[in-house]
Length: 340
Image 1 (cartoon, rainbow, N blue to C red):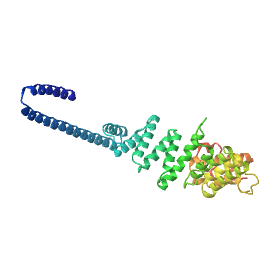
Image 2: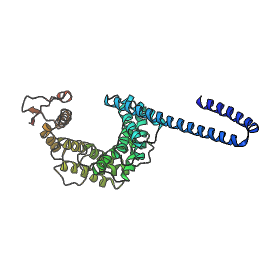
Image 3: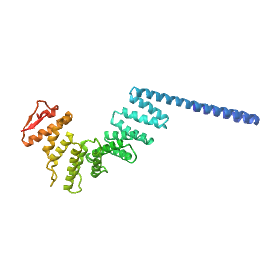
């Protein structure tokens, strides 16, 4: 509306000026038109300055309001005010990063989290020093089942210098995402089982890595990989599980994992290792069970009961303490037991 009014006023002024051009002397006309031109320029400059002042004032109000809602942990509202800020001025990287972080905190649906992945990646691309944003984008993509996207982000991060701790965590995430992608029904991924075996082998060597990586790698050697020969693959799988218990001898779940592996696949042919038996491994797991949590103890005692049942043995309690899990109690196996 203001532009229309100004245009009409200018058109009216131009008409009057042209008519005066023919009726007044040119010297007086030149002075008069110069004065008006200066007045118009000053007015336009004032309007532009006022508009910029109003815009900066509005941006300040939006940021202050967003900060207030952030302090109140009302993430959705805080993000919405920054979104309005960016609609006016999207040049600020810091504001965009904050908007991405608040959007992540407020995302409560799969669709919202998918949008957050894009925002976090964009924020990282605008400021490559914020590696944490890229890592969060990869984790969010994994959590919502966008495994290919998670893998792509991890590969982008592997290509640059990142802190060692971050690099180690990315190895774990990379292996998990690739495993999930390849194990999907009717997966048409460009990744291969050989690539997954390499990722799992790298992940299992990370300090504090879950036992699952070793178990998955051993399974791949038996069920998915086609080279080298079957006997060689069996030896490699067995070596993976032996390394697991060698590196974590005080972890009852490591012994349980190798017990389960031996129950399913047995010892490799022509092996001389007679100590690697299902019975000895479950005995070690039971002996260390006090270091496990209730769920883990349930798994250990269940496996021990099944092993004893298959062997036709009877488990007798050394104490009257009970197993803390319902699943374990169904087998009636006490916390400490001996065989007759």
